[in-house]
Length: 422
Length: 49
Image (cartoon, rainbow over all chains, first blue to last red; front, side, top):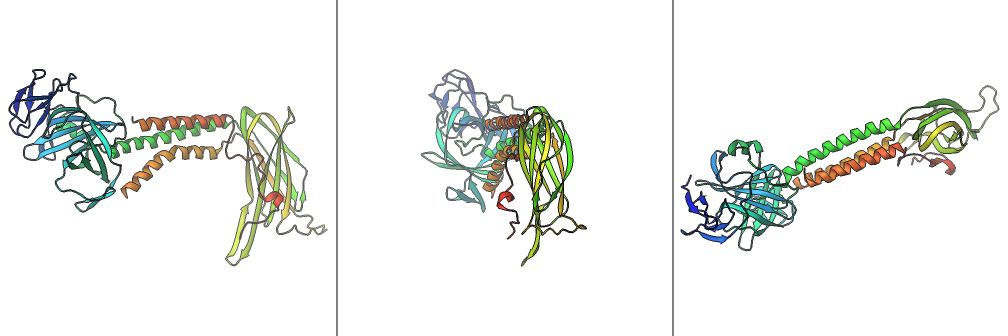
């Protein structure tokens, strides 16, 4: 590593080490945060800060080995895009130059400044034969705090405009100021690798925020992808847990079960009078009542079913309807069939009470009712309908709706992300 | 925990409370109350073309 140079802060008198002496032009005092010009032999105070240097995740001066090279943390800055903030660290190696580490919501990225500029427009660019797609509009980011030394004039309050381009986990960051345009290539880095290289982070920044739009003054910027992916996993997990808890709650609240079954015979071409099937009891304040009608095997017939639940205490009737129909035929495409021999009707908000279940029915043929022959052997054609009325059912439709509501949000985010990757 | 995750957690809680409330009152968007199936009245028959 290059020889360090010790200076005295003209603001607080503290001794400061210039680690990249000869390269750094800007330095923030680690004791008082004042901004100093170290490009000349005499150290000049640029801006005095009363506030002590902010605690960063990596202490200035820390050395560590990444990708086979030893790097020293020479500068740190806290950046914000107005919605989120993150930390960026300037690494220095006298043989390799400068690199960046970006910390956003616990995720790290390693950034390399580009010397070859990508080609393309503001939406899609190509760099070294690979395409990258823009994931954000140009966003203004601000340096909120600066510590350590930098190879250009950097001060709190400096702003730049950044655009991010992604290809999978890799990100290209373009940063524009009034004077220049810088590009940085960023790749994700496991936190364990940072801890192994630089030691555990002694302090963490203040409350972290989500979804930054920013980048660094040197071209580095946080990658939104990794943090988003983490909370997307949490979203799916939370949705699954909520769906399971809701399912248990809905099953528990739906019971208990009261069942009555019976059978009615419906002559085709006529209507039957309501027939009492039996009695069911609703024991909760409200319960669903489901009535299932199963018929024998018929073709080209339909059966209208009228259900009535008559409260024994009030004689109030709750009505519902069912339809069983089944048709077959042939046409130019061949044989076809339509309908079912079974139907289920769900009655909601049935209040607590004891109910007599009545079923009336009407059956007809298609395309017309069959001609009834006064034949003593065959008699009148009838359809046998088995009725099953019960309490204690839950609405699976409501649960599926809940599931869709839970998964819509993370699903849309996932879809949007895959669309961007494509 | 990101703010987006917090909002989503609140959304999950709201949906859970809503589904439990609707189940307690036996309410469903998909119940068949007073809905007479379409074949009745208009005459039965297949819709097959």
